[in-house]
Image (cartoon, rainbow, N blue to C red):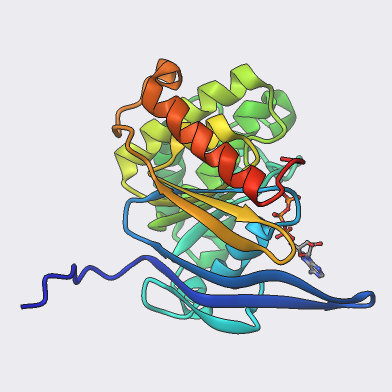
Length: 265
Ligand SMILES: Nc1ncnc2c1ncn2[C@@H]1O[C@H](COP(=O)(O)OP(=O)(O)OP(=O)(O)O)[C@@H](O)[C@H]1O
């Protein structure tokens, strides 16, 4: 009898390769990347600058085309998945239009997708509540702190209720206290929505605190050097960072980075 799980992976990469052709010659950004992400996983990608974290996320989002191997998203090609609105994408900079209110920024993709005005209104209300920004919909981006702007950009990515959320260093530019708070909120949001999250970071504590799976990468060419399934429980108060389990996982990540010559992380 076949005892293997028949649940389809959300993201599956096999021997994925991407070489950029540049004026200075080829840049081998991803090499032999094998990774399976299951429904509800929170997967962090960590590694030194230039190891291909963003490139991998962009391949999932069909913003880059791999030059070798296979990649499926919900069993489809990344391009089909994009057309099926399989994911929301959160960039490092909040990227809100300054002349539109927060509500109108969140509505923009919904307008483009042709949702009715009533549906747009309802969705904006729901996602503002999810990111704890009720009451701020009529404010303009400049009236919000950096952390609040980033939450608004997460709300925008959540608005069309995709099952996958791709986040490229969303909290990289924020101070540590704000970042801690947003990490806690993101975990609560993840638990509430059961989304599958792909998250790029340079921070070991952030990766260990948030993830069910930590993917350690090394540069030139970008490869996966370790995949760590977190032993931490799903419920994670911030002080879990002082626990022996947390410290042990953080140590393994650090060792993985060091082995890949990740001194510049
Ligand atoms: N469009 C492109 N054309 C040519 N080279 C590219 C392109 N995009 C990325 N690269 C190169 O591919 C490699 C991987 O880049 P990528 O941005 O994925 O790394 P990263 O791990 O996300 O880095 P960082 O942590 O600094 O954001 C780098 O050497 C980068 O210069």
